[in-house]
Length: 294
Image (tube, rainbow, N blue to C red; front, top):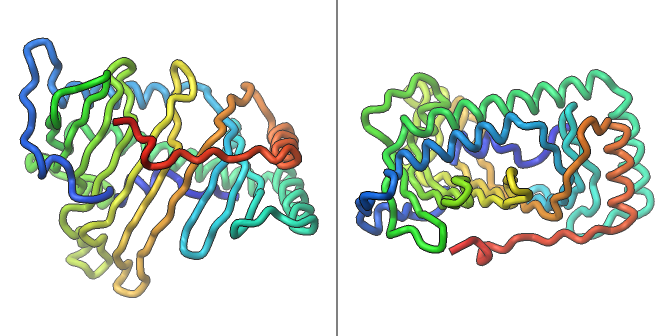
């Protein structure tokens, strides 16, 4: 029962539009201002430590892709995420569809094999994202774009020629260029976008490629005094695998109505929470692009 819109593939192959660093000259830090690189390093440290905390959330998720348009209610647990389908193709589920969802959830929470698979997949995704985040300070060069205002700094990033990627994953990450918007009070990332600056070939193109211009955009929301969650994730990826299978990933996931989940919540309790949310008809409040902090 995997979730939709995992951050691991998002960060692996990703950004949006022409990077801002190419449009404006970098800004030299003032005497009392830490360098852009040091600020990013602090941001990554905070993100990694946030991920280590026992923090689970319930939220509404709208997922749109070429072959899928669904709204889900999702609950995070220590055994991985569990979701319930609420709407499909712009329409609420009818009685028969809702009953099938209830049956699917009941079967899932009593199937140790499925639970273990989802937990392993979730843990693997988390580990990949953590490894990528640890790579960021050494893989890129960073510059302020304009002076920080209203407690927010814009930082441009581009590949550091001195960085030597040692894996396919690292090569894709290192090919990215884009911008990051940082909340200076908490030193947390508000918004990230970037694009693949040059095509990335695997095995001289024999094993596959990720095309230039493939992009991602992630916006994040402060859900508590110490926690931030992604409330918008978009990816646009083009390429091929083994010269046969087309790699096309165009999808958008908007998340809203974040609510903390009590520690120790079981899958059975999560199923009950999902059923209550479906019965109450909680409305998703999507974050429009225009609401991104300026």
